[in-house]
Length: 243
Image 1: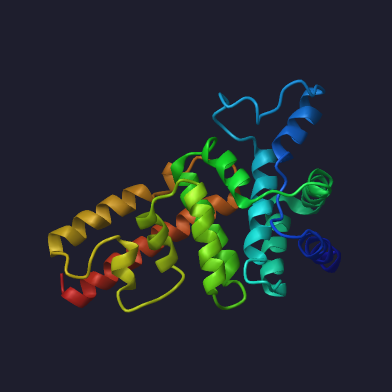
Image 2: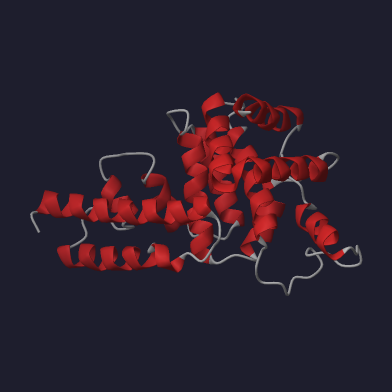
């Protein structure tokens, strides 16, 4: 079963050229649920939340884009996504998600901009931050985050309307450097001790798991991981400064 699931995921990614997205994912599901094609979520921009079904398929679309960003489809990255869908939704639902994904995008392809813009209009900022964290997790699954993967995730972050400082903070959680802890807290290395404390309180509040309102387990897990990274960064600076 695991090999079959990985093969299906790989098939989708290899087969679809360019951006691997389905602009009509949301409307396809709305039409199925309502039995009417007279109105889709792409015409109804007063709708503020994305349904779980829409989110799952849009998440899979963004996963596909990140996996192909460097021109190489890594088996470990495929396994990362496959394991997430299997563990989160179970075999039957995971299979159904992939079947629907295939049907929706079979004859359509659009850029990351469409899906990201769609999500930015229907999800809370905190959820979009955790979404970026998850995408970086995919990129790192093969042991290293490439420059092309970073650039693609940065592009997605822009479409999701995530601020550059927040993007750099999340990136620093995956790409280590000498001033990594300061980047995570979004401050300069020359910041005063009081500034460090204020930055920690601000970031801990921003990334607290309780602020992430979503049914998606990957996003919830990402919130917990990011919160721990903020705590570790603060503890590292405290240790270095003796405060």
